[in-house]
Image: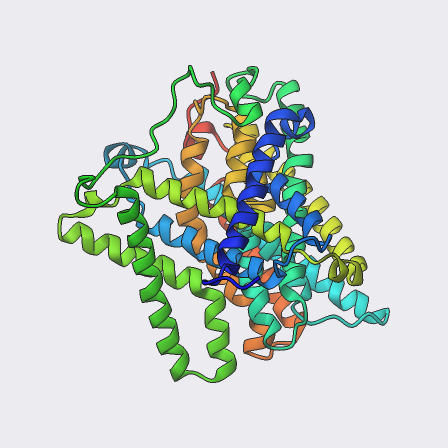
Length: 462
């Protein structure tokens, strides 16, 4: 049937929306999902993965991937536009840096470890006759440690330089990471609670946390504050316009830089759109503060935009996985995912047990981060610290500042075999060096061998 306007984009959005609604309904009704705290977006994505392979609709995988890519960029831009509404509290807590530093250094251990294991398995499988693209194993830390957005974004760029199906492989690793976060992380946290490691003791999780739907009679958190008069413009439209404006500026910057660089390097820039977008958003936020109009960018609404984009991102990325490609690479994907999942779990548990303050809380939080996303870390933390009485939730936010050089640097280094013609073993040695530096810093900051609670930045457990 001919339509007067193109509907492809809106039909894809409608498809993702139905999947998310189905995920919300299943989370509210199915005890299995509640037990493991599986988020609705992941449930909807798994349902979409099934539907995408039935052929009952005409939505292309490439369209779903495009949605995921843009939602990923939007989430970073929104984070950059979100201002801190708790300046006084922030100043009080800036001295508590060793907790966030420990988490950041854990990323400095897990990201390179996952890259090393992935790279070594590429070499090992090559000895047995299975030739893989040099950066195949580096998709593991992109999927586990950084999440589906980075795995898709960089994987798509790698496809342009000869790595066939890199985006789907990266999304698969990200999906496996989520399974470790929830189906391994939740039992680990519950075991820690039973062994008495919870700082404030266990408490039954509220019903709305399990079902994912708030009690209509309860007290709900505010979604944000109106900053414009509704007779002028809707506040939500203005907040989205800020995001859209930053998106357009970022596009122009990358297009301009791409015109100055060789074609292959210019193509790589699009994989870092999120990073440029974050930088532009921070500049816009700074400019608004200088003009004394910073209050117009409401933090609450921007957080809702971030959450909205991340939910749709996860639905889209999981639904976009092409099972025929996963089947083709089942051996290397399965082997790398299993080895990295087990070793990441052992590493986080080992170092987490060496903390004397908030050991379980910090272990739960960082485990969710290095296998899924920051949201996964907060979900696992909520099990052991349902009222967020410990400072760990705050530490996760501060951790992002400390980990930016580590994660950002590692994200650049995974491109070493492509950008600088590094042999794979040389890239592995570089990541081994990063692990060594992270261990040395942990020792220098006295984050090993059971540092005292005061040194870690928290009070003694009550």
